[in-house]
Image (cartoon, rainbow over all chains, first blue to last red; front, side, top):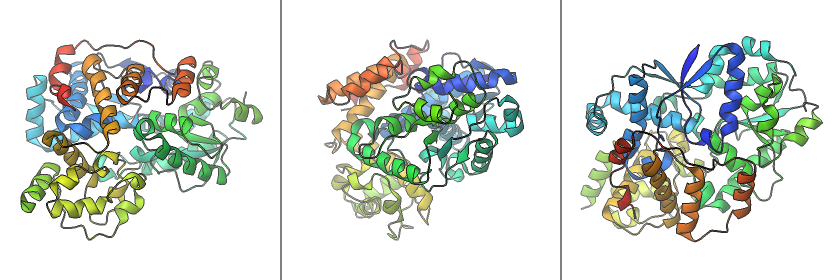
Length: 282
Length: 176
């Protein structure tokens, strides 16, 4: 099965391991990625923070491209891109004026035929049982604090997406693979997003708090779903000792003993290998 | 005057603010409130009172990252992040002095990358931001580590639909 795929800028750069680990995981299940041709940046925070037209049209150009390329589904890895694309599509479909704005800027109207799909939806569609079939090395000794961040915990009535329905699936999946889920109350706290660059001190205090709570819950790593959370949680924080921050897909890849695992693990700013060695996973 | 400002913010953000009864849930749940000069509910009150200059010149509107935790907690579903988007846009249009120049510098550098390549070239973004703020050596070692680990793409990739991107991003150059 080939799936239309929107990588987004981070996955081509600082979050390469997130995409690689996901597709390496999907390939044995017979799923291949067909990258959206000529995709562009979704606009992210800087666009919606400064001009609604930039945010709308940047996001919509991708949906128009997907429609031109006859992609019925477009899979998105980064929750920020996902929310931006979804929000733009929602505006166009609910507000004729926005629809016109898009046709004017991009030369044709959006027909609304593309279904946006977040990578967690795909994991859930594949299902825990299929994942179990890939399992070679149980994640015994890994106690993960699942960190959803702000983008995944928004109310569904706003973005049409909420981590709620996935939470129990993810916890189950993690347990099925032999890991232990840490119970903590900080999984939905914001990581500070782009203030990680402009207000490092502020974001460090947020990260310290997240680390402290993860550690108190007995976690030996933080499990993330977003490229920006990943970078902030590794790069910032001052007082609390750092905890490894792994993408869920990297851990799945580790459990499935995918060949490129060691390459992803070597790219982290907080080296996860000591913890993994201690758990005899490496 | 007061009514005019309120009416404009209301119309452009699609929000009505009379539902706010200042329960302070928004600020209580806000992860970045400590860096704000006014709490989110105070901004609402100031909008209602027509305090255009103070609102558009505040730090709060720029510090908000749009994490939506205020909205999740608001008993009356006042969409504060949408209000903040509108206020920032109005501040730029009015040409007021932006109280958080570094945050705007980041947005500007980011959008400059998008305008130029259609995508964000992270290395270029960071360098441009650092140069424009003069904080070149802050984070130098982290940046170096990321490069050494291959976490930053060395060369930008460009979209083919350049013209279309330039048309979409019309006006980015005017961002001060």
